[in-house]
Image (cartoon, rainbow, N blue to C red; front, side):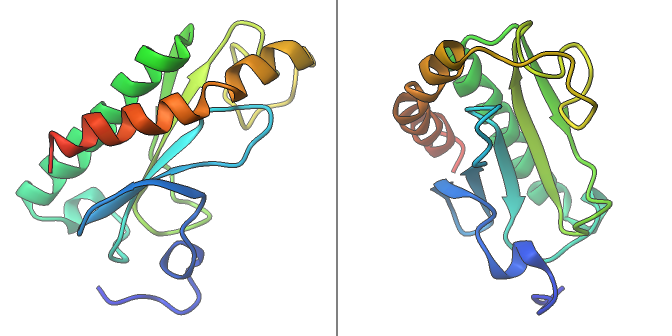
Length: 145
């Protein structure tokens, strides 16, 4: 499929680009409540995983696993959430989200109603890890390319 002029992910990076190859990009989502929230976005406009060839799907998922590995290594979350929704933005992308027992929505999804307010100190400590996370993302993803 060709780029869609109305698609946000065709026309904007979708966050701070941490890694990019010819097929996809990994971005850090600017979400103060979820430092380390990443998206793996297929560069071409496609809606479903089955729109990709088998080798493309394998590459896409290998990078998703690299992002999960980097998040676990650097951020040390209590859990990782993976989601491929695309209901609002029909452009193939995976959310890879580090979760903590003290985050705003835990144990519910990040899109659910908040249950608590995370401490400023815990959010700042996680935010301070973002440069290390970006380096780890690149290191892990380059092994897939």
